[in-house]
Length: 410
Image 1 (cartoon, helix red, strand yellow):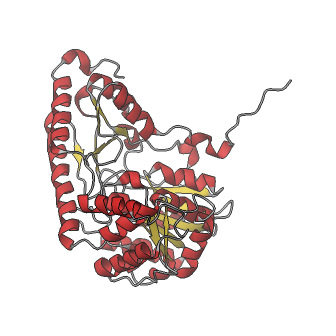
Image 2 (tube, one colour; image 1 turned 45 degrees about the vertical axis):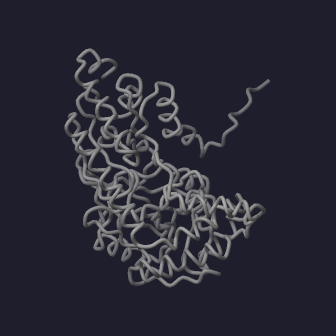
């Protein structure tokens, strides 16, 4: 009898490992502080949580909500886009709500890509992008962000476009690097999309988490882009309630109709009471959004300065929940090995910023150090000040114990 073939289809086999789940499990196993997975330690505003509880008690959203999202949330999303960015969206035809931004991105890729179409993304990328592209049967083409500051290389991006390119998937503020693309960079990306008649999926889930002067520039605000851009947003990120898994897309009616068509055959409908709560949350005053931004910026500064004192070289974070660093003082030369070692020996978990194998790239343009992905850690600072300070204390204690510095290091 012949051996049974492997159950998982070949195109998805490279996605079996979730580094986020793996590192969170290791953190739990060793009672380590989890600065790997990007979820806030503290819940979002009490009034939003109370709005969800009230919706449940009043029977609003306990049964299937409309598959495209409740009208109240779709209207609130359209008002948010106009209020913050001057973007006019039709809440009836130009918005779709889903089970988190993750489902929106997957639905968009499935809706827009035929097998063999090319999707161009910047590298490193959030791991869901690669899985979604492979799930759609499309071909991933990656363009490397330029080390050491992870800026987009527009010449490399233009060179990556072929007659099979269908979609540019752009993420700013950028996970995992913490980079926020400048207005000039966004205009340069837009010019390439327009010149090649491409659709852009713009992942902007960290839109209110930009720091210092690195203001977020939505892709749909660039001239000529509103009609070709699907903008992805997230209530979980905006209100520090990631477990509620409510995200959305907005854009031109034809593209949103395509996403809606696929999305209705995935989870069909999502978190009715939470949709009512997020509709309320989007009406909060500007002070809330400014406080969210400045509070996260302060936590960035705590972790950045603490890691620097411990002996890590920290790359500036301009936005998101994340910053990146080198491998620090422990004697490791491989990010994956260090990340697996730290929960047990230093009591802290981080994520190795690993790049896909070179064989997966049809295009790989160039930073000066092609090994940077294997020598970089990503740290999440969306935690309490107490937790961040304790993480730094633990790392320093591990550095101060010479017997642990080289244990297991290569």
